[in-house]
Length: 465
Image (tube, rainbow, N blue to C red):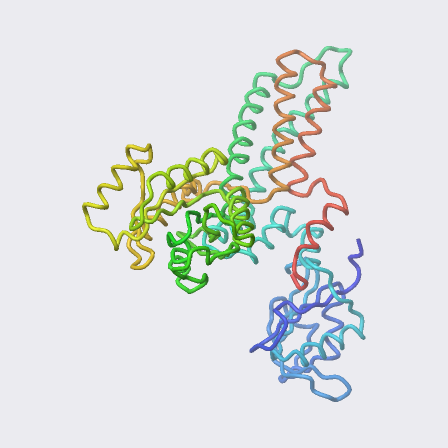
């Protein structure tokens, strides 16, 4: 990888704004900026201390392009570990492009996606899991996803993995040493302590692997399918949850022909609600396609909210359709919600609840999508499906599928090592499994990498980061 050249990119979103930030990084970044920056106080750029901000103008051929603030970061005390210059100019696309083109003509090239963070990793400023957390932080859209990304970027996860890897590496060295002195029958590694370490590593890896279920939910949101017969108020419920008229509401059955999706934040977690076509027997071809898609969306959801009309309650249809969903998707979390309770009196409500209890559905939520009654109770029920305890306890949570895969492979190797020790296999075979486990740990933090791996990770970054 070429690290000797100088790269430039717009670090703020394209388009008109109050300011734009242009970032230059490389060995000669400060020297390249010097001829084109004129400080209003006559200061020389190369003589300034690191982390210094100067006011001046970007000038070329005696033409002033803009009045700017220029910040100097001298390597290795910069984000990339190299010399870095950040130019804060006015947010005109014309000005931004003029400045970028100026430096492209004078020793810079356009940065590739994520190249600033890639250089930070290659120069030892961040490990690989921390670098990936930068992208997660930029993409965070809830309190929970932000908290996890910050923790990982500060090294919470990688420090835990590095410590485990270091302890395992120490024992690996002792076992390798035993192989060198195999003829003398010398034992350097304390097998009892090694077994205790393996047990501890197993426990930690299992905890981290189990946390991925929560982490994946936090990162990608929980898909929730709102289902039920036509005209039970599915679209009305979606609208009141989103606090906007996202879905068409009509008294005509079968108004919703296709699924409508949108996401809201509940208690710091993202929930992606899917309003589906009403489930019923129909001769309408288009509506039939919509109903087929309803069952597809149920398959994709983690939680199913089954809505029932309290005002037009149909005993047989309701229970047969609920049972159909249960039988088709036994692993799905199901919430039965009795809607339109504002249209029934207390006695009717009590009678319907008795029917549900006798039918094996005692835990039914009462709700009015029209008035908003019961909506908060539904939100609280949805939060129960998220294990928020690990978040509150500030435990390490895995959100990255690459890390999850490496942890699974590392655990499999640790299990093999432990089984091998119990069976008394030879030290050379044991050493092979240990080296493989160390390799999987190293893949997480970046001690073991390949150009393909790095390319796959950083191409998902935005340009300028």
